[in-house]
Length: 137
Image (cartoon, rainbow, N blue to C red; front, side, top):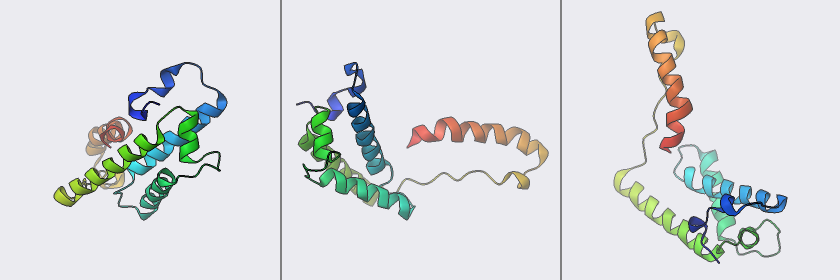
């Protein structure tokens, strides 16, 4: 079996509907696990913990369990699980050393800006929040 990080799953060619759905479930869980682990929002941290519980579970009975999803996608579930949990340990150690990544605040509300400031700042801010900020995380 191949490791998930070594395999561009979408490049395998035609996937069945079942495989596509399972890939979406796996990608969503991994994204939630990584992106929200140290979030300031308790709701998002809960989402990360639930994704981690799903990754850690060794359930074979539920069709969309981590293990079954990995089996259908021909991904080594044990290697992926170990890789993700190792990432978590490294990330938590980094956060303990350096502190959490600071959250970039949005600029002042538009009504607090002069017309000239709105003309200059708003387009730059809109560009940043639409195109740059999503890539920073």
